[in-house]
Image (cartoon, rainbow over all chains, first blue to last red; front, side, top):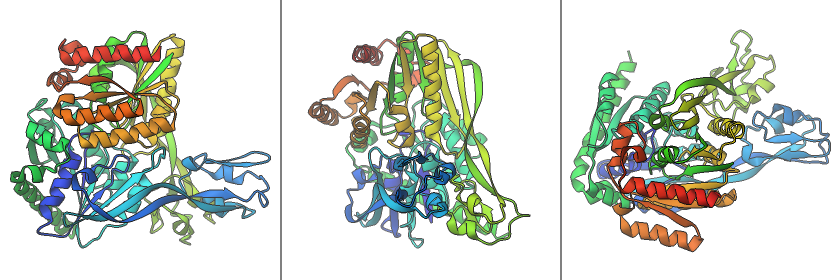
Length: 288
Length: 285
């Protein structure tokens, strides 16, 4: 089963939920924790994994053989990302704009374009507290997170419970991280910013056809509008975490919530059971 | 005219609350919300008289079933696993057009997408340019560039002194699009290990693009050991910590009221943000 954790607004507690959920389940099932917030991965700060495997992630970008090139301009015309420009004497390649689709090298009439690997980041895998830990890191100065997220998700083991920590927002990195999940937890806080971004996140997850529910973090701040929205939209609030300086203090020091406050472990196990029920119900419904 | 962008690396450190207050303090400026996929600045600035524009960007492949001979070449060449059973999954489609170019019977069209909207509006604190990326759409970097371009035009026409941009979290495409070519980045961080880790990465991006940075530690009193660690780190790199904002519920209370902190209260948070703006203005001068 794949459970993703997303939010819309940043800083609402995705990492707190993903790490504590993974740690609460590891004694009863095989768990993988995937940090797919590859721009700013933080799960390792809490999990302190032992990394046993590291692999560079690259995009295949064009390399032009000027001896063969006739400067016909075809590659520049077909590139949808303006990553290649042809002048009379030279072909200019902008690797940071290239999506690695391969169209230019395939369609070059002179076969003058080959592909070379352009590194954009790294994925690292290992073990943390008896569970599988995998994360990706986008290199500083690089633009494209989705290829790294795809690589991290390539290590999903279908026989395990996979928890995916997504990045904030609702654009391509979030879609890449969340798609193909069996269930999505949306973590929010009951403030106007939290609600505004939650609504966007709910729309995104629904567009992907994934069932979601809400985790209300820092309950006690803000107003009651988030709960009203959830009620109206029939979105169950599966877990409420109070605003508490103790919780904030453990978080600030990189201590997972269920280690600092073990009394929360049962809440996360119950959360997982509720998700299991919903996912199973969905599976049996779809048979009809 | 000077352009400042507020970034953080980690989300939820308080970028928009700081920018909302800057809007109330700074004179002669235009505001730009560059967090196009989770924009919140409008909740504080309450814009009116909106000018709406469509953002057309990117393409998505569509297969004409009547023309398709099911040869499978499109599926073979697609590197994004966007085609199966001779159908395109619009969410996975990257819009590269490879399939459309190779299709032997020209059965694949590339259709333009409406990828979002952008707006120019008036607020009580001056003009605001913001946007809304379509749900599950790509090209957020391009939409950010569009928002900045229009903010710049407004600033030039009105002979304004500042463009103040609220940036997105992270370090990827929309962040780079918000940052490149600006005069100053203000990095809002928090005294947590996650915040510190993410600050280091976003500072790396500022260095990479040659944009000078100032740091603001928000909720600094939540963990004073970590705050000292950030201060020492910044000292070592020669980056100024321009403000330390205490934790205070007034920030959330102001947000609930749809106001900036400096309008809502005159307490410690408001004072610190006011002094932060003066430092920013000095650095920009």
